Amino acid sequence: MPEPNLKPTLPLRLWLISEFIVLYVLIPPLVAGLIQPHLGDNVLRRVGITAWSFDVGLPRWIFVFPLLILTFVSMLIFLLLDKSFENRKLWGWSRFRGDFKRIITRFVWLASAILVLTWLLARYTDIMPMERFLFLPTHVPWLMLTISLLYPWLSAYPQEITHRAFFFHRYRTIIGEGRLAFVLNVVTFSWLHVTMWNWVAIIMTIPAGILFAQTYRKSDSALAAGFEHAIYGIWVFFVGLGYFVFTGNANVG
Image 1 (cartoon, rainbow, N blue to C red):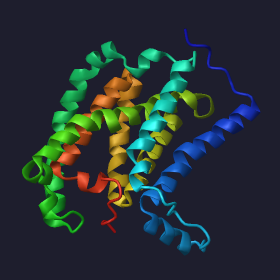
Image 2: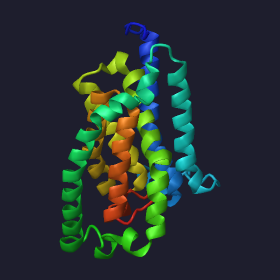
Image 3: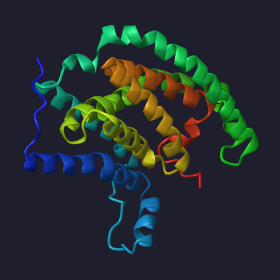
């Protein structure tokens, strides 16, 4: 059984606050710089830092999925070893089944809206090129299929462990379990996408973060949140919005 939610000592509280800032505030822009060193170095120069560089001589792909998987595995192990955490939240199959109909019903309506909004964005604005609308399924279906198969397990579910299960459990003693925790969760999930180097990715992951956080809080199932994350993520790539959430796309001013 989970242990009582005890108030942390001052040293532990300071440690948790510092850990939170490092993991969820500082690491995303650091990774953004490592993925796109020339853009990161431009930011450093703008703030007067010329002695440092984000170009560390390592392949940039190391800082994308390998880093995410390493973080996911580390946080997963922590949760499994923490006796105060209910391991059923990592999967929660029965609760996922109970929430499946709600998730799918909401997806049908929102997916239709996303399709229309993406077409309008491509047709009537300069933000997204028209040729990107439905680009993957019509021009590179094999890549669309690969994304559909791999995205749920290499990105969606790991992020629901790092940004939902671990987040809400690890920091509940300093941010509570109410509105503050929810808002911080949505903001930090959106901030994670600073690695994409465009403002559209940050903005459009705010409503996504709200949906996934609601599902995790409602179902207590990372599987449910991961499934919802996966179907929206796949749909985003299908309609063409993957143009903005493909790591390193800095073509949006």
